[in-house]
Image (cartoon, rainbow, N blue to C red; front, side, top):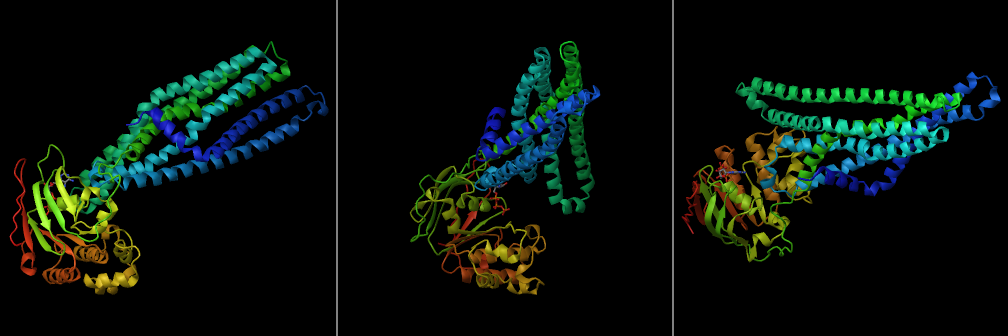
Length: 561
Ligand SMILES: Nc1ncnc2c1ncn2[C@@H]1O[C@H](COP(=O)(O)OP(=O)(O)OP(=O)(O)O)[C@@H](O)[C@H]1O
């Protein structure tokens, strides 16, 4: 995991393309606080001088200056907020895209470390949290330093000792108070982020399993856990709010003590007409320091969020693309697995052990095995979602590991029991198999998958939205949309995992017939844990996988060859 320092540098480096805007926002921030100070100091001088009743001419340009500072303060503040927020939101947008792009090449093997709620939390809440880092942490220290130096010099023109008092208080408010709030706020901030993540994970999991919770009377228990997690978050946020109050109170106290001390020192050393000028100038100067303590108070939270974001951004795919990928095979598409062994973790039993299989191109084979025997795992290996420990897989003369992932995923057309349907139209859900497919191609595929008539019976036809993961479709309809997808994708090798699992016998037969006729010129590997398929198809090989414990082997039993 990156250190907080390295994260801060990385985030600051991201600002490089916006360096001009950042500099402009910084100058505008200095100008805003400068205007505030100018407004307070000239107003104080104006009131004091007017009180002496020396006549209107003695006021000089001061009334105009007051008007100028009053207006300029508002304008500078507006422009500064506009530019700094614009830069911040652009950076956050870039971070979100960056984060998403880094997730995509991570195989399911890596992503299983994160739950959906956790990933959502990182992508949305944690990245949003970083806006505070940009707005509060980067510019304020520089602005505070500039204002401290300038005010020290300005006060020195009136009285060097008053200037010294002012600078001492500004240094205390700009260093000790932020250090104090960092020290107290760091762990509270981390706890807020962790509690919020826990709540998001629980919430997403609960929403996804709502129907089952209700069906099994588990909803109340889930709700109770949610209350506990939520209370915990509220408690941490309350602690943070209390620290907010403490920090605000100390800041105000420091400002007032500083103004009092400056007055105390200046009273016998400075012309009386300038006393109010110095007192109000002191109060106004502290405007530059207030954000610092607030920034460090929330820094722990922001660093925790940034670490969670970078943990994903920094992860390198455990199944990397080959550095010099071979060209995808075009002539021979024979599939060969030679002595392949695979398990999900070193302390888990092998799912496939010393497994060998040869499927000449165009063959239709059946892999049978009871639930848990490794059929889906085999698909994962062929698709390079997981890596095998030993052995070799090749397509034609090409080693699978030497092929670009993109090419591998073109070679195999996969339909599993858990095909995901996106929350978009049926048309788009089929089109994901081949993005340049015409509406006609899509309809041809849907006809072959025996889903065309059903789609037409829907009021919106192909433009019907299927809901989240195809929620508005039945299991069989989902499966047939998935089948239309694979029919549309022109892959030479099809991996069909339990494709008729959710279909009634009549539909199952017609779907199967459709697959067999559409897949005539291809290799088709059917996988199932039930026997009936064997009665309907003429397979070149039937392989049986067996579940095995730590040291049993996968049995390969060619029945027909
Ligand atoms: N992501 C994973 N992490 C760890 N173990 C896994 C994972 N996926 C599957 N397994 C385990 O690997 C074994 C093989 O699972 P797999 O899903 O390949 O079986 P299957 O034959 O496809 O089963 P089914 O017919 O029920 O889908 C099982 O013991 C399963 O618990």
